[in-house]
Amino acid sequence: AALARIAAVKDASIPAFDVPDPYYSIVPVPAAVAAAPPERIGTALDPLLRPADGSKAKPLDYAVYIPADFGRSPDVKLWANGAPSGGFVATVQQLLGQDLKLRYLPANGVAASVAAASTTIPPATPTAVPPRG
Image (cartoon, rainbow, N blue to C red; front, side, top):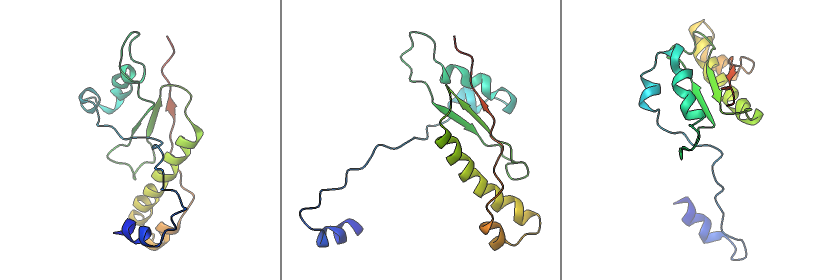
């Protein structure tokens, strides 16, 4: 409906919008990773972050683990197949930070409206990079 309304008023000299490629995509969690206990997720991710030589598998750039109890603790885990992009890490921290605030603060007596307005509780996101080789 919105595109039809835009087309009705758009000047013919304005080119069509070219949708850019997405910066990332979310993929289903592989069974071996989903079945791994939290302390073994990194091991289960190793072959996905760095497929074996000669493999045609496309390596994952990143994997993010957000535990079920996120909010009681700010800890999440980020794995990368190389040096992580600062922009990606900042985006993850910003998104998880907002969610963390909205869970943690109201659970500790802060009004939801105040929690929503807060801006300074980033999650802890250490990054594990598998060794090369």
